[in-house]
Image (cartoon, rainbow, N blue to C red; front, side, top):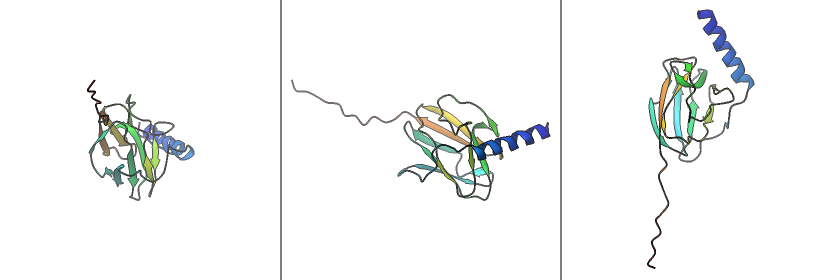
Length: 138
């Protein structure tokens, strides 16, 4: 059983190395940054709004494979932006990566396949309305 997990992890890492992830660039102004250390996210919960992105910054010397789910297990979560071509993002030291747009309100979870104790809860609230009501005197 342990050997199967080891082969699965090696396969995931090899795949993540071979396939580029979505948009890898500097954080947008006002972006939500999640720091990553050894076996931990810089916070356990973040609340954002529909239309926001999250930025992950790996300042540790450790490799992380970010996936939707909990306890290092990848779990499809409808409404969550994909984290890469195989719904995973490989993060090496110095990596700064921006997710796609969060477009569906709800609660989502991100974990690291190499560090099961890493768990980030993402709470997505509806977008705030910036439209103003137009009143007519007619």
